[in-house]
Image 1 (cartoon, helix red, strand yellow):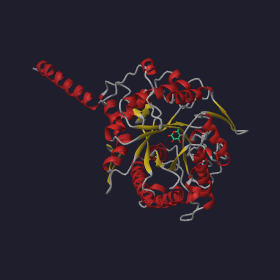
Image 2 (cartoon, rainbow, N blue to C red):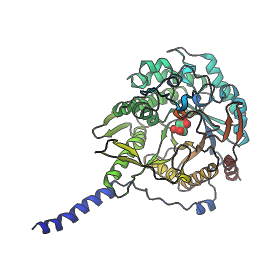
Image 3 (cartoon, rainbow, N blue to C red):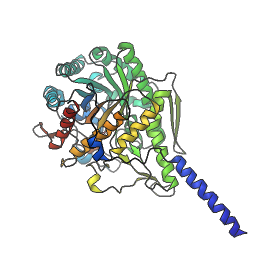
Image 4 (tube, rainbow, N blue to C red):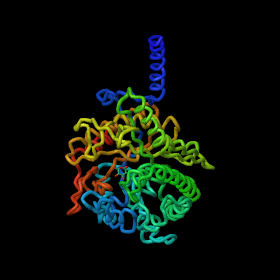
Length: 467
Ligand code: BGC
């Protein structure tokens, strides 16, 4: 009897297990690209494709002394350790504020025709409702200089930093934070709207929300998943407020949200818990933002840890999606372990960047597939790049990712531009200056910029695409 029962129950359980496994497995996960074949494919980048590089104000400008990161750089954690690696501070960073003309020439030297940069809210609105004309003048001059040099500006309005007054009010935890942010956006768009077509509202809601409110590597270094999810909701609301504000001032503007899209793969493809958890991460961290853009509906839900749901009155408040893609992660949930969440690392060192991120160009194709499942509106790769101080992996990284992008375009995806992160080495947040992503190496003692050998691959591909 027992034997018969087992003989029946085992196949039934196996069918349920594998049924669930296949149901939850992300479609398109098994992608294998033959890079030798991709190399032989002609390049299909259009003549008006944007070839750019990206930076953000706090990371390059210097003298950002009125924002939350400035405060964070002097703070210590619960154990008294500095928040930033080796207690480094952004300080004058790359002195880009004063050297922007020279830096624009660096872009020209590698034939770039676009530049994504952020305006520093804390410099423009040093006190609530008080705007600094000199700071606005500065950004207008940057835009003019770019245009004079045939470089299309793409402005990011929020790239991780908040003015201290806003941080002290509670930043994006405040219910009315979208309106406070929109007041600043109105001022910037009022001044620059006639000269700038491409606008990114918020850079990476998930990185800001989870870095600052769950992982604790960003200010205000809190560790609460529910709070992080609320922050994410408010950032998306702030995006919508910014979108409507800019469009009122400049209806022809193209306004988008920048979403960081990582690949979340199960550490073990045959472990149902791993598979379900990786799907859950992908849905909450990536799909949720694109669904918000397309359907106006935001849902974040990790059972027993976080649950936020929000329906906006408006939908379709975007003209493009900015995709930042860097790597894939293998997260492991250990419901009965001491440490509940872990990243499993088994990538060989030759496939790792200095950030210890896996080099996984196929992932770019996968995230683009995911985004295009929801929308056919234009996509810009607003960030993609490698921290590689030895400069031994950069050329191949750039080439492989661009080959993948070329394939995505030949497969009909609506991709309009690629912005390498970053133009030059800069202040890499909690890692300080040690991680070097730049096309140009920066000597921080002299501020000398030198083009890296590996970066020439970028120039080579741009030129080839225009033949
Ligand atoms: C951020 C950049 C950062 C880069 C590399 C992106 O998530 O937008 O500010 O420097 O990743 O970590």
